[in-house]
Length: 353
Image 1 (cartoon, rainbow, N blue to C red):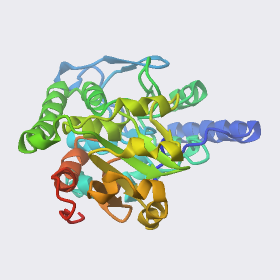
Image 2 (image 1 turned 180 degrees about the vertical axis):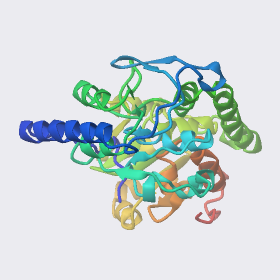
Image 3 (image 1 turned 30 degrees about the vertical axis):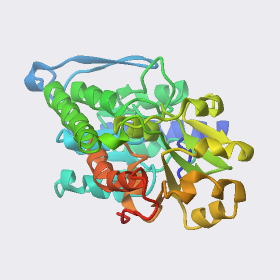
Image 4 (image 1 turned 180 degrees about the horizontal axis):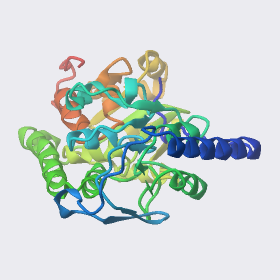
């Protein structure tokens, strides 16, 4: 599998499919209303938990008022489940991003607490509205998403929907903002603030334990249509900077309009000659790199400053799924390898996770 620079979620669908989907959704909603017990009883808005409701959440398409603690949350965003689990709520539906049963990855299994796995929603051909409706949600959340106005309008016809933030690129909400927004939604603002602080402390402890990272340059990259690197504003780049590294500003000239990253031209591959170069690697990645004489001549190769994170490792997914539950896992598994990369000894190799 290959970590694409942007979530690969095609939004195209024909007018005929769109019409059929809307009809199917309407039928499901009508069926849920007609069948006793098909949908859960709504929480009493007159007695909200902790007096936190109603709460209004601003987003790209306006604002959504939540009257009471949501009981059946469906996620059309790609990574909100971890923060939800950490705050004590299991969604009934998650959206497929990378590969994990029910969208629950190994680092989040303990937080699931033995609860049934959520239903996994595949958005490859667009959001399956009828499947979302069949889950009888009382709230739909798409913070880390690229919802269109059409998506939002259709989903809002199923249940109140919270879309991605306004004023920033899609799929760029930080894990901190995701966590605090979910805390407001759940009436657990204090718990969310504590979760953010505890997670930021994980980074702080790693920086304190590894002062050698401060001021060093680092990049995460993958072989995707050439030498693709993740920029400083991407979640992978922010992980490196949170550990004390710097993503070289010289790479900014190649960052695409989406802000996630870009491709370094083959003749400029020397820009990847950084203090620590983390490759999100498939089986053939290393041999492909070694076949490039220009890349192989770089000091990052001869001085042992590469870190290969294989797609068979759980940390491979974790570095792209940046959440309060995945971050401690990434720090535990990646930091020793970064330390080996910058120690000045080309022989030192930290074991794979």
